[in-house]
Length: 381
Ligand SMILES: Nc1ncnc2c1ncn2[C@@H]1O[C@H](COP(=O)(O)OP(=O)(O)OP(=O)(O)O)[C@@H](O)[C@H]1O
Image 1: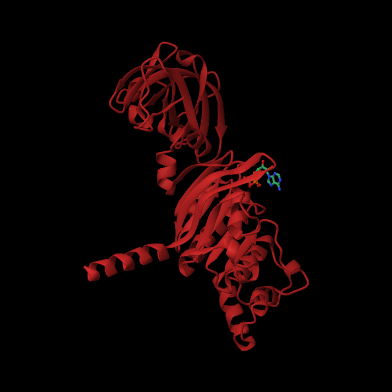
Image 2 (image 1 turned 45 degrees about the vertical axis):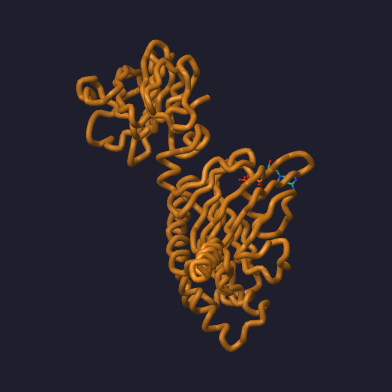
């Protein structure tokens, strides 16, 4: 018995040790305004979490609470088993990178990276070697002697990353560090972030409103809106199984078809809109709608096919006629906006990923749109 008990304790300790950050019922109230509303989640060690949401959804506030810059109005934040509020700022093992760089302009890249080691009174003899190792990690070796203004924006961001990581923090916090970079560089840096994070295995929390960045870099994504966590899931799950209409709308390009529920059979639902029947599957099995309720069918732009004739779409479950309202050429794809009379003139967005392979449709052209019912996620109102 004692042996079994001993094992149980050991297992419990191991499970606790695996959690790096635990946010427990955290709220932040600014004079009656709830910027963060009852947020709770656990982040395992070594994982990359992104907090994603529109402007004003509470992302930065939550990150600042985790960093210990502010105390929550209620709730608790525990990092590696210790309450953040109980650890003085200089003892917190947290590296940070922000959108607005805080590099020291009068110092070289190497001096910037060495700074946290000097502050923490590391053995001076080991510092140059360590600085060089971290400059190499961010692909800046040989550039240590450059001053900040002699580096490009992307290189400066790399110095900031090396400086945040050089003292081997338990936790790395990133607040939109790539937002100021141009798109190509930003996308390169996203992959760099992922590479460095995996190489070092440092637990990371990143804040962004860029859904692509969240999908590319993260192990887990938290979607926030109005101070509340809407969903916490792996990137593919966030994309394919959004927990509510807000998440479905915020990530990807989603069309919503609102209608009256006509039939519910298991997890399949049939909606009616303007005389057209649209079938789909329930997004949340626990919330069964009743006939007569209003609900929305959500379908992604890439799950709809567009064709001049309806015959080539005959294997699809739903086919409707539409008039092209706009065609937006984006290089690798054309985005069509097509007006569907049978859906009360709703405008449906469709991606065509093979624009060179067939006709491009002009505004005013009559086309057909088709999709499968398994790709329509039905959300209750
Ligand atoms: N010190 C403060 N006093 C009062 N209200 C605040 C304070 N800081 C933030 N807020 C409010 O809390 C809400 C959340 O702000 P927060 O900065 O966390 O949003 P965010 O999701 O990070 O937005 P963004 O992407 O624009 O940075 C906003 O409505 C903001 O105006």
